[in-house]
Image 1 (cartoon, helix red, strand yellow):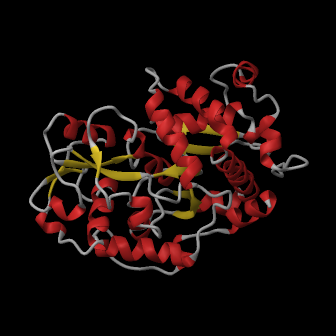
Image 2 (cartoon, one colour; image 1 turned 180 degrees about the vertical axis):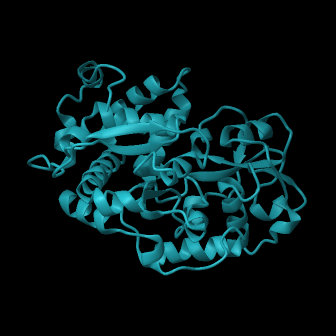
Image 3 (cartoon, one colour; image 1 turned 120 degrees about the vertical axis):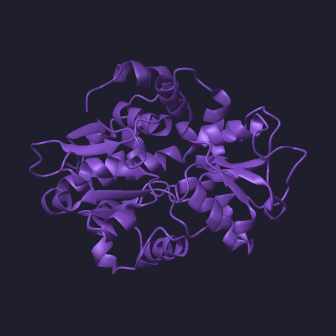
Length: 338
């Protein structure tokens, strides 16, 4: 992976030279066998992914696990899967793309191979003089992004879980996660489904009492990892190494020791560093532990997602676990991490 800035300078700046080795809990490096060509890890170029990519690179987890990685940045929510389907990528480790199962059902030669962030890092924000509960959103406007996109889908699922008729809520496509939040601040809508990165914003908005999705939707996997059938078949050892590296990174991210490294990586990734946003995400990672060093998903996890998306109308049919998922690399990686 081509370094974007000096690894030694980064680690010295946050006092973590050698800390990544200790954090991994491994006594010796894991080396992927027979890895000549790089494994192509497809990623969106957004801030959260850029932060994780910087941390992965600068803390040396790829090196620790013997990963010869090439990060391929593809814009657009469905860009990574499109690239993989076209043979231009091997695995996407962090994806909020909610149509993976639908694409598989329609013939995409990919499978879900694990999870990124398992808990939903979203909540519902409203103006202080407006709704205080989800039930109060009836006949109100809620910014959620495109219809059947991730924000819209999870907001509908949240309302259904609370027994609220979502047809009585007026959903508005305001674009991205941040754009949806900004629409509430500007008074264009009554509420929004937005990232927990806005929890510390000093914009006067309030969090709706029962709107924390990591609590209300505990069985919903927020981000899946998926890989091409070709990579699953021909790059198994590389996949194990990649998933071990990400599992180690996730475990580190949820520890109190990660703050300085996380802030340093985010400062590098963000043109205008937002300390309140960085603090909100870091605190969420430490207190809610949304990740797991074991990236594997169960048949029940996949079944929940299938049932959810069938209920939301974005998936036509349920398929057997083996048709849509392969956890072999994730399970082997989990054994490396103990």
